[in-house]
Length: 348
Image 1 (spheres, one colour):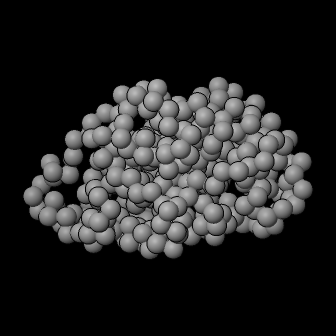
Image 2: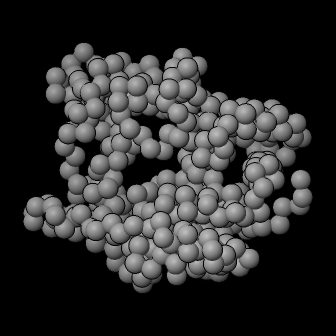
């Protein structure tokens, strides 16, 4: 491997804000390794030990996470989870053992043989001597760049705005691309997005029954679970019941405002020249201009007119949906999102 010279680069957002679109477009750039959902997939063990040797680090990277095993149970019953990139037919062999997190989410978009890449990566990581955790991650990112013929890497995880603190702590020279969106549109999108619906329904379960159904593959429904809720638990999961279950939208907007408030305060601690704020709606309106701004921030050498033209042509308009909500619901949502919207106003 050659010496790693680039600044660590992370794309952060509240989720449902266009960061997946941006990551997918960057992955088409011939010089960019765009890693998706790596830290999300590893949560909550991603920074558990420091320093760490190669075998222990590989254990952190490869130990199955219970929520992915729980997801498999729901996907087998028909639930679509786009962030789970490994082919479902092959993933079902991991029902009992659990699927390694990088196989579930991060490696499949990079290669047609994610299992082979996972095995190769494992051999490399286990050979590493003890070092600080951030250097071990840099070793992995550098190895993947070399292995896949890319020059610059970036990492994007959904709802990663809250990860700015650990990322800036462990990677003090890091640069951040913050992708944000109209909070009202976030709320509508989040209310329909399966992983976020699981989080919100799980929180309701925990408050009412003491435990959440989507975090453990061994979850057992309480005996007093109302009939209307039985289609939500893994053992009797029904996709239609899950999708129709009504979630109040104003609290989602309130949660978004809180994430924005905390996230912007965290980003204020990062030198301004190492932070780029990118508005999702601006990417839709002027994709060529915004994508050029992104790659120039990442590395001026990435300014590739051919890639920019191709990537910009893939961006599609996405008309706002929150305006179609009933008037009273729309008013509550606007009020809930107002604090976060006010903080973002100067970034537009």
